[in-house]
Length: 226
Image (cartoon, rainbow, N blue to C red):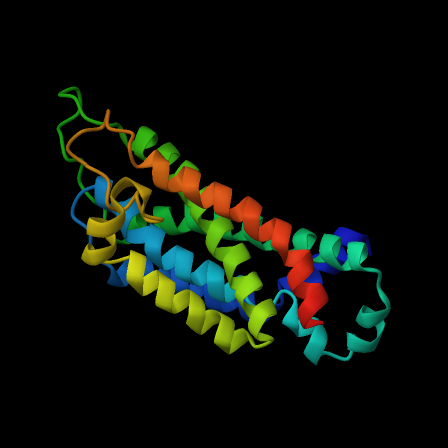
């Protein structure tokens, strides 16, 4: 088996695949939407929370598993590369799941366009492509944050809890009022009525910068926390 195949077997066990698929299906059924522009909004925040849970055990599973003794013998560079490789695999899977989850709303609910075809407004394809760009950044941020929080606390549950507190804070009217366009969920809170308003990209740019910072300090966290 190739190295990538082995990594996929470790970071994408069957139970994670099953509960994430169930999550996407249930979201598409239970979260009601009326218009197509609401689909991306309905997906972003739940998918972000899923990413933090999904990636939380990327490192700590090695501490608790039978592989821990071998893992401790790895040089730091190899540990870090292994962790980021696994995060990358999980993020690719989550991006595909996010795209599939978007489609679930059309499968189960058939939302209507806000404007009649040919009368202006964003097309369905445009909405989907913008959603993919936004969710790519969102998933990366919350996934790498979930892993970093878990590395700091040495507990997947504590790491998930820390992410949940931040998630509840920014995914709220208070968070929108305080952070505005710099909110981590700026795509969700963007001005739907003005498709030319791209201020929400500031929030995604902030998430991208934070991803780089978290990735840079992750090796130091692992070194300190073991």
